[in-house]
Image 1 (spheres, rainbow, N blue to C red):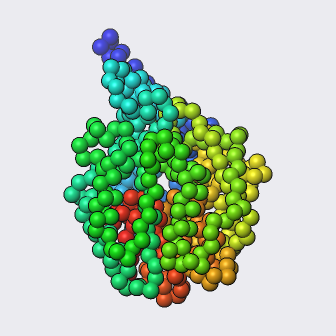
Image 2 (image 1 turned 90 degrees about the vertical axis):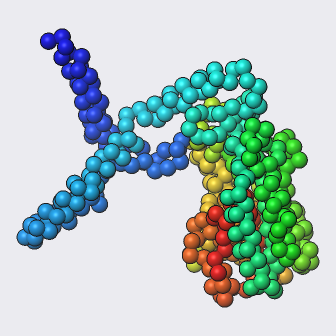
Image 3 (image 1 turned 180 degrees about the vertical axis):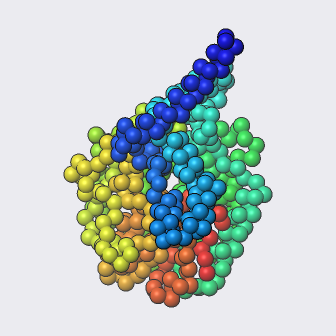
Length: 424
């Protein structure tokens, strides 16, 4: 009998764990979480809706037994039901968040022990994410980007795309505003440990080969201290100081070809939110225990309208923040909540007297700066190609008159062909 006690106990524990999950679902009911802030994604919840059972029952009631049998077979054979259960069991497992935190905590202890005698300026935050934390825990950073034949081929493809759109529309001024993130910068503290790290090489390669008609401006840092003045330390975006500096640079850029573009708007005011503790995307992904950052925004008195899908739309929640209405979740996306999120297409209407229009093709970095740039034009059209896969420049320009086209963003938006290609 002794020989069977241990396997029986193991089997009992295994079955207990298996049955804990559905019991937990029944007890919790609607209290099961729908979204994981830590992972920035929706969590699967068990539901028979959409599995096909309703159709099976309908076919049975109609007397179509053969069809009902085939449909039921699909639910089982194609594993619709098991996959639903597996996904929900994984995402809704009891104390799942606590288990993730415990696992990451163990990762950190192992990593700290491994690097105890090393002098690397930054060490991994965990075993999976690919992010690092500065040794003084002042910032979380992405690993250095790689520069190789593949990345240069992507840039070559993008350069041809620029050449094409510029040659097709010679009467339009084309601008590119490149925002250099730390992983592409010569300033990255871990560059010395990666032979193929970018170190600004992608930008140099692009500059040497870009069309002369493309007016390029670069947003770069002179030192790590300068970088942290312009960018968040726990998030991949630029902060309000970086945004306002970039705004000044863009106004000067536009004035070269269009003197009618007015100077800087003088009524911009930086405002702080002392009760907001900001832990950005890097902190959220890694769950690393780092101090929260302060979060600032800005306001200006310019009046404008934003149109989304033909309807007037309030872009960003600046007014709510001013009224003290904002999320207090630990990893709340204050950058998106305050400045505005990504949208496939927006139109900003300022009705300026200079009668000039602008098309902006950008990524999430332009969310914070869109109203400022748009204040210098009558109509500004914003396109995010990551969410506007059917965008056609030819079709757009056949219906909209623009004087300037600005492509603004990071590596993948401005230099690479991965996500930034402008379709004919």
